[in-house]
Amino acid sequence: MIVAVKSLAGLGGLPVDRSALSAWLRRNGIPTVMKSGPGGKAEHVRLSDLPEDVRLAYLKQQIETLPRGNRGQCPGTAGSQASR
Image 1: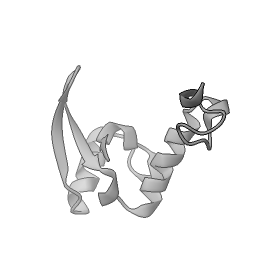
Image 2 (image 1 turned 30 degrees about the vertical axis):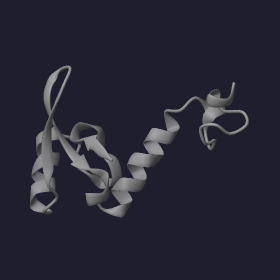
Image 3 (image 1 turned 60 degrees about the vertical axis):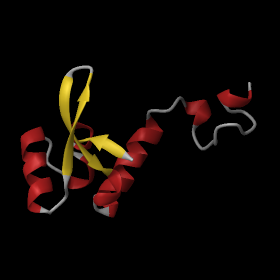
């Protein structure tokens, strides 16, 4: 899974500033790629290339953005939007 570098700011002890975060990734040998999107090009990183604590913080953040009724449910299971 590839995620935008800016979405990692402040997670798991990472720098909050995007340019400081990019520098941290370079210092730690974590490769990034530029991807085009609606707002232009943005720096992205493979989630699997990040330290475990950062990966877990990112995934926790993503789970917390789900509507409360969908947390912990797999698509297509009873009670999920996919089965309705």
